[in-house]
Figure 1 (spheres, rainbow, N blue to C red):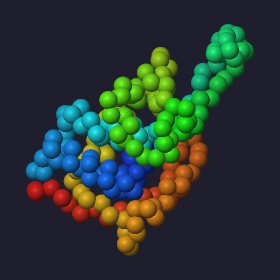
Figure 2: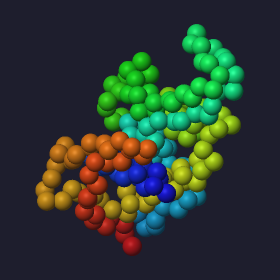
Figure 3: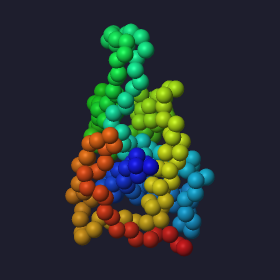
Figure 4: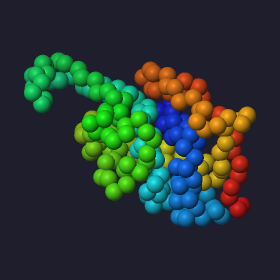
Length: 198
């Protein structure tokens, strides 16, 4: 649950920092869900922009910045590099998400970069391998993504969000605290205003 809650906090932080993206996501939710009901799990597959927002936030803020691999069972060569038996390789997902060879304007939050793209979070696209890949991928992938999608969609759909004490979105501290899980250095504090008709 720690990884899901951390991902949700990063996604909401990026949305509050980028008000135009928040408005675009709210418009998608309003068009598909309407303003007279809350988001349900059955609605999630129809929310394309929500998926793009989540991919982009996880690209910039991977919850687990390092994937710890299993031990190499035998000597092998990968792209010309000799990997000796019994080696362990850590994959730096944080660096992959900010690699200028893989991403245009890599430091910028732009969910639209995933429009028409087949890059996914399920381990098929090596630009986004947050849940690992292949037979060793995370068993909680479906549950984790479902929770994150629903718990981002629900508050964005039900509320408008502002930062407290007149703080501007550009002033929001986006510093990271590195560990096994990369959290925000300071927790997000925001003020909700109800926006649904009910």
